[in-house]
Length: 251
Image 1 (spheres, rainbow, N blue to C red):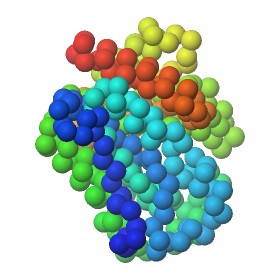
Image 2: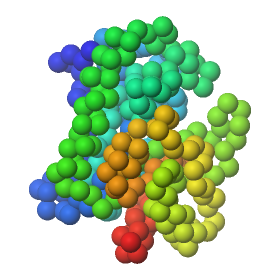
Image 3: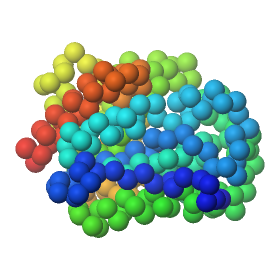
Image 4: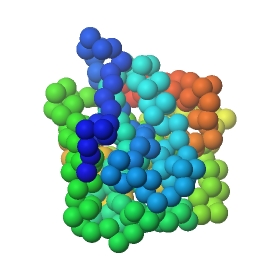
């Protein structure tokens, strides 16, 4: 699937290149990139579609990097578009390789064979999650935070919340994030398990790396109109860093 001309699917960063930071916070960004492997050309869609939320989580990568520096953490991020393969979906998810996304048809994904899906899994999905697993084994983090963004309107339905904090079987950290935002940013509308809910079919990072390891975790969703400029990125990085600090100081 990937050639020598294609970029590595895994982007890894740490706050201090010499490794002197504690690395207690592990961040992931499953939808941070919007690259397409050269073998798939343009997926059969206009270039403008790759600017939309269907291709990536707008602002999520910039937010992840800004937050990483604030918490002296580590970051494992994905380079390729979720339209190629969604790295927060498991093998049985119907959205793993979407042929339609928010009304846009993806010709390269229509009728894709299992062999085609397996090739994308092996080239992109598997290395990404292998790196997350390796980072957890190398130095077990105190907290796993998965960073995402969401569109203000989906399928004609408005989403009024500015952010959501998601969990399934282990809601303790999402509870703490809700409390932190109520204290530090009461003017914002935040929600728990909205605009999405986490489960074993629709999600991968939380059940596989968080729950299976009994690792404290939260999936963060920030409405992408909050992340359109540097000021918004910095504000949300500050707020999330405060929430992480609150979790660390009140375990």
